Length: 397
Image 1 (tube, rainbow, N blue to C red):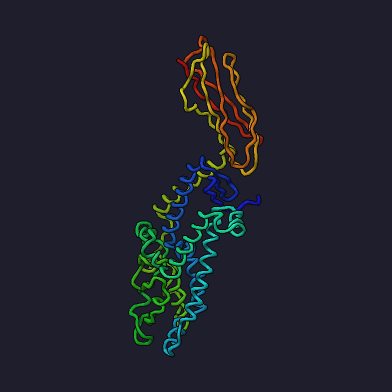
Image 2 (tube, rainbow, N blue to C red):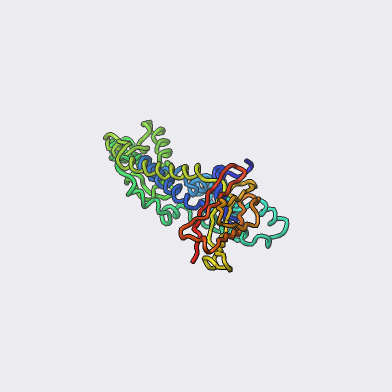
C-alpha cells in the first residue's frame, strides 16, 4: 500500500509491521510476538545449535559480509600482509583507505537504521533546512555511527564472546542430539603429519586460523563458537589437497560424531514448539480480531456527579483513536433512554490516520427518577463497518 514493510514511528506512536498498523494501545501484543519469537529461537537452537549466530545475526552478517570483505580487499590475505611486512612496506596508506571506507559504511548504516524510525521527510529537512532541523535524529545518527565504528572496526567478535548473552544460553538449550559444528575425533586422531600417523587430521591449524573467535574446534564445542562454518570450509579444502574425504569437521550432533544415532525430535523440542505456537497464535488472533479504531468512555476528572437544581449531571469523555493508515469518519450514537437527556457537541467526527480526539458527553437525569445501578450505553461506528458498544455507570447521590 505504498508504506514501508517495517516502520516504528516512535515519535507519533505509530508502528507498521508487514502491512499491519499498530499504535500505543496495541503494545500488549508485543509480549506475545516476542514470546513466540523467543521460543522460535529456542526451538532452532535446540535442533541446529547457533545457526542464528553464524547465518542470520546482523553482527555476523555485517562484519563478515561487509567490513571483513573490505579489509581483505584492501589489506589482502594474511600471507600477503606478512610478505609486505617482511619487505618493510608501510601500511599507512592501506590503513587510511580502509578506515575511510569504514567511516562511509558506518554513516550509511546509521542512516539506514534511523530510517526504520523516522519518515523520509526528516532526511529531506536535514539536507534542505540544515542540521538544526531535527537535532534528535542527528544525535542518533552520530551515536549509531560511533557504535558501528567501535564495533566493526575494532571490537568485532568480542561482542559475541563478551557482550552477547545468547552464547551463554546454548549450554541450557542444546544437548548431545543438537546439530552443531564438530570435529570427528574418531577419524582425525591421532593427528600429525600425513604418513606418520593414522588420523586424518594433519594438524595444519587452518581451522584455528580462519575462526573469527580464535578457538580450536578440535577441543570440542565451546561458548565462543558462533557457528559460522569457516572451519568446515578450511578443513574440507585441506582434505581435498590431502586426497582424503571431506567432513572431518562437519555439521553433526555429538551423538553422530561418536557414531551413534541422532534423535531430532526430543521432549525439549516439543515443549519449545508448543510454546512458540501459543505465542504466535495469540499474536495473530489478536491482530485478526482487532478493530480499525479504539474507543473508550471515561468519567471526567472532576466530581463523579453534580446536582443542578432538580437534575443530576454526569460528565463523560469519549476517546476515539483512528488506528488505520487512512482517514475515517466516526458516528457517535448514544442509546437514548426516555428519562435521560444527552448533550453531545457533535455526533459525527472525521479523524486522519492515527489521529485521536476526546469528545465531552453530558448526561442529565431528574433527581426523583434516579435509581442506583443504571448504565449509560453509547455506540460508535465508522465508515469501515467496525462498531463498538460502550457502557458506563450513571452515578448519583
